[in-house]
Image (cartoon, rainbow, N blue to C red; front, side, top):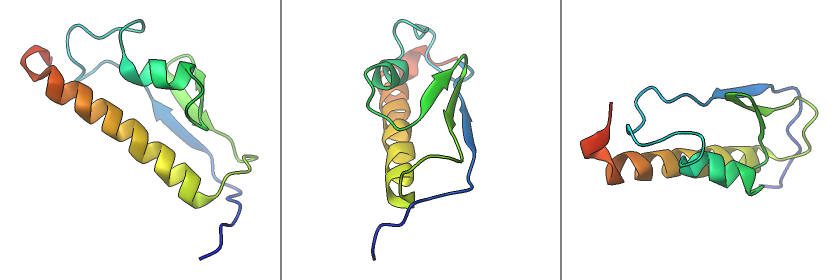
Length: 85
């Protein structure tokens, strides 16, 4: 299946600490580090990650980014489950 550019899709992912381990904050969150290191096609805007309609990424890239971020959060929760709110 050829990669096609994804157009016309606004994606906003809230980044909150509800359900996060108690020791997580903006400085210790592995997802925020991942985003700050430029390892995602989403950009941060306060407590949201945004992918604009005008992005030039394929659906496969968008989906892969979302899955990577989900894995980061899942791993963090598993490693810190005794501290989860």
